Length: 109
Ligand SMILES: [Zn+2]
Image (cartoon, rainbow, N blue to C red; front, side, top):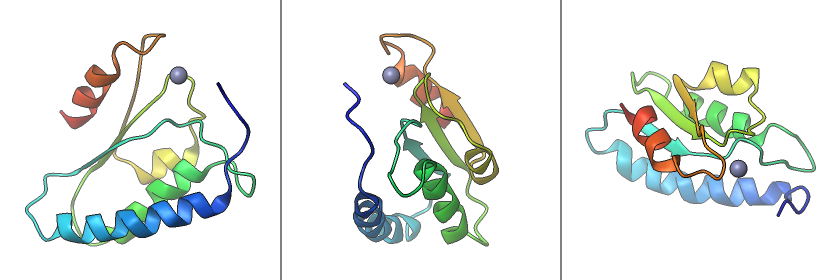
């Protein structure tokens, strides 16, 4: 059940951990990056933190021709920042989300 907005520190903690994994991954030969997002995560300090996450990732990959793909819940709050920051955005089409894996596969393809 939805339970309100998330503290902004959650994103910063996640981003710090993700950065370590990203550095390791970028040392390998990647075809792209696929994120399984939700798209309706809300922070008290800013409503579009998943757009911010994608923006930071795009910025971090500057100079690398790696596509960024993400799949979103069908009730995501899709934003212009998400669109500008990702190459591919797909969404679940079923509720309940029995097609979550298919949405990820579609984004990866
Ligand atoms: Zn949902």
